[in-house]
Image (tube, rainbow, N blue to C red):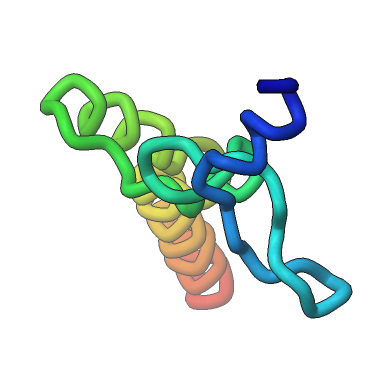
Length: 87
């Protein structure tokens, strides 16, 4: 059996192509080829979930701590301006 005959006997990916046909690449165990493997199902282990949580952690200008600090400074400036105008 030639290599091309062997590939023809494998399950094909079948994902829709831009031309409207189906992908002819051999499928992996999940039913799609290496190029059309499908979307990630996300982290499953506790370590993976923790890593994902840390990756999405907001820091810097828009963090809750930075926003609270800016609110505090703004209110302090407004109180200072009111005290100056009253005296």
